[in-house]
Structures are given as C-alpha cells and as structure tokens.
Image 1 (tube, rainbow, N blue to C red):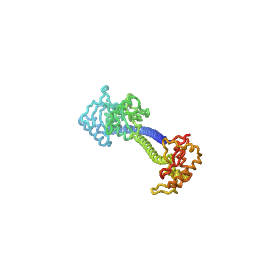
Image 2 (image 1 turned 135 degrees about the vertical axis):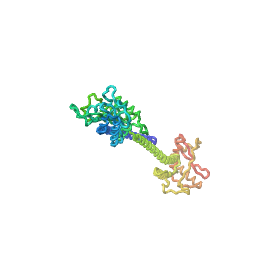
Image 3 (image 1 turned 90 degrees about the vertical axis):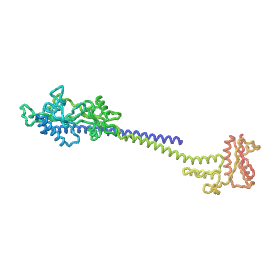
Image 4 (image 1 turned 30 degrees about the vertical axis):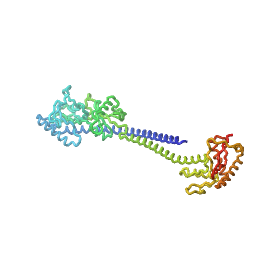
Length: 499
C-alpha cells in the first residue's frame, strides 16, 4: 500500500470518527436540551399557577384587611369632606405602614355605596365619577366593585385599566352599627368598598422569571401586557418580543389548557404553555351570571436551545479536536516518512550501486529501523563474494573498511570498437572463459607490481554483475572482458557480443 493511500485512509478514518462524534454528541446534547426544556416548562407551568393563586389570595386578604379598618367606616359616614379625607388618609396610612411587602399597591381606593370614588392613597384630589360606567350609571367600570357593593363578597380578579393589567382585590365596607333590613340575607349594611390593585409590570415579570427559571409573559384579551424579555445588556423590556407573543396568542398557536407547544420567538425555539389567571371569591354563588369571563393569563416559555451556547462550543471543540488529530497524524506520517524513506533511499542507492557493478560496496548504518537490513545485506555480500563479514573486516586510517580483492572495470563505451578477436571470444565456453580471464588478471596484477589476493569466486561474482549491467546498456546477447594493462593499472575492458 502506497504512502499516499495510507495517508488518505488515516485522514478518512479520522474524519469519519470526528463526524460520528460530532453528530452523536450534537444529537445527544440536543435531546438533553429538549428534555431539560420540557422538564423546566412543566415546573414553570406548575409554578406560575401556584404563584398566581398565592398572589390572588394575598390581594384578596389585603382587601379584606383594608375593608375592616374603622377609619373607612367613619370616612363613608362623615358628611364633611375634610373629615372624610382625613379618615381615609388614616386608613391608608395604617394599611401601608403595616404592609411589609416590598411591592406597594399601585392603587388603594375607597368608594361609596354608589361606586363614587371617595379617596385614593397618595392622591390629593379625586374625581368621584372617575370609575362610573357611562352606559350604566348605577355601576362602575370595575366588575369586581359592582359585585362587592351589592353583596357580602370579597373578590380578587384581573382588571384591564386602559391597557394595564391590574391584579385587584375588592372587599365591601360594612357599617356594624346600621340597622339591618329584615329581608337582607347577609345581615349587614354595605356602605362602600375598598380596592387594592397591583399593576403587572415588566419588572415584576422579570422577578417571576427568576423564581420560575423560564421566560414569562402576562397577557389580557389576547395581548401581551408585560414580559420578562429584556434588551441585551439592560433590564429594559424588549417590547418587540411582547409583540411576537401577542401574535402567538392571536394565531392560536398557544392556548390555555392546550399543553406545551413548540414555538419560535425572534428566531429562538421555545416550549410554551399558557395558564389562565385565577379569580378568587369568598362566595362563588353570589357571582352574577353575566360576570365577564377570565381573559387574562400567563405564558411560560422554556428555551429549547442552549442559551449559554455550550452545544456550539462542544461542536467547535470536536471539530478542532478532529482537525488537530488529523494534523498531528499527517505530521507524524510525514516525519515517519521522511525518517524511514531517508534510510530506504540509502539502502536503495547501495543496491543500485551494486547492480551497476560496484560489488565492493558496503552498507553503512542508516538508522535504527533499517540497520538490521543493512547489516544483513553486508553479510550476504560478504558470503557471496568471499570477503570478511561485518565485524571481521579491517579499516583504513579514515575508518573505511579495507576490501581485499578489488577489481577495476573500465567504463563501457557508448559505441565500442569491434574487437578483432570477437569470434574467438564469442565461441569460448563460459567455464574456460572465466578461468582464462581470472588467470590473465592475476598474472597482470603481479606483473604490474600490485598483486592481490582476490579469490576466484569474488572475481567471477564481480564479473557477472558487470556483465549484467553492460548487457542492459548495450542491449546485446553477452559481454566478455579482456584484461588491459595501462601503466601500472590493470583493468577489465568490456567487449559486447551481439550475435
């Protein structure tokens, strides 16, 4: 298998594992986020119901406590405006001083038996007919007040005050000293009523968000009036989100009693559920048949995505991890390739050198990976050529091994001249030829004053290696050698035989 194929396989495997890890992690984390969002929504749904119930009970209790203050009875029975205002202020002050809540009521008001506004906390002058219903002169625009003025009932309800969602509590003011008509089923005389009201604001919605752990939106008559959504980096309500919640309500995508629904708000997916705001009364049988139906509610929205972008961080980490693993593996392959190939190249050069006729070549250590192969090749050559094996050779002053029996060959000419004794060379048998050339070579070396202890086997091996190289060079049938002496140098000259 080629190095390129190995690298490609490694790259594909790493890429595949990274992709699997990416999708498996993404899927499992997405499932976890979905399950967490659904569980969070269920908790918030139950929590907002309980919170609304408690708030309704609390506001009705405050109305009941406020109505029991004798100062209001005195104010309603007084014929003097100054005395009426003074007694009302006393009642308001007593209530606010005893109220330990951090959130103060937006409205604390006193009305007479006809629904005329008598006094209002922190308001110096009031308009008596302010809450009068223009279409029904004997009623106010607040249905809860109409009920408590007509019967001994305490009510907590939602009142839409010109677009403001008000959580109100209304209770009748009873004159304990007034004679009771014989036909009065309650046995009391109602001389007026008190009203306590809290405006549902974005700030309160944000407080509820911290309690519930989800976004929350309060709505009335199909319109979002306060939400916990804020603009980035501020506590200011994001009114654009409120408009989107209103669209969801009007489209019917989220309805009370419908269970959770997956919706999108400004590009972010949420699981949403709506619950109607509760209405509390001490006697539901006293409620008129035509009393307005509940139109207010709360919507909780649990983000079906990772708000902290942890999933995105994990995905990026997996991708970077895969890229890092790929880069490290490719670098490792490259460095291994360079290290190993450098050793292989040296071995290959040595083999090529031997193929080209240099049988005196020895393989030096090339590296720990291929040192064993280099040593094995040296042993093989030593045994084939009859020279000392590695560890047994002698070295010159420069540290190079001394190779006995060196045989010099002349380079083959590009166009060799025709040998005059070509026919005799071609017809000579191989055994006789090898024996004759060896004898002539040894004799010529002795005659030149440089005798050598080259063995017959070593000499013939070198001869055959060079024959093979020159046969390929000349593209001839065979190659024979003649012993040539030039000065004191004895060498072998190749003679190609083509026929």
